[in-house]
Image 1: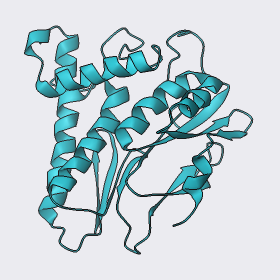
Image 2: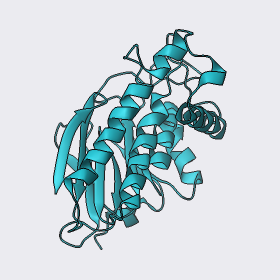
Image 3: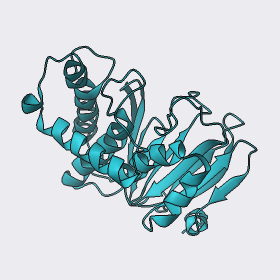
Length: 249
């Protein structure tokens, strides 16, 4: 069973192949994404993020989820030597570079708690997999060609991992190199990261892309991640263990 809804300004689709899945299971996950949008959106004046930026909510009044996200953002900033940041171009607080992956991962835990073992969650191109697809095989996930719309250049076969892509080919120059904020990132156009879950993949994908061509080397050094980078000439560079993910099991 597969369902899709538009939440957080993007399509979110959930496919669950367990025979005992119910509509209530889907509703619980979609309701969680609605909650995340209401709490963390930078576009809604009523969100906690917006109220923090407006000075309405003080630090001692932050919700537990906000405290957790801020802690994880600070941890990621340290681990990436400052390439990950929650400071937007207008100097406002913006945790969305981490929230999407965090939200998808949390949604997967809801399905785990419901006893579901075979599912695929995609939100805005970022994916969390678990178990097998309807054919009893690992889930296949395509990496898009950043130069040719709707063309797939690699297919990966995943079970239990998360995959996230950062780039400028779809939304333009929206990722900032925090060390050189006035210089656009032009030497690469896309960087895909596969991790043990979508939270790990997503938070490092954005930071690694901000590093430019050095980003793939950063991913290479983290033994629990694999990466695939496409530069502005269309040349791909990938980590040593990446090719294993393209093997159908």
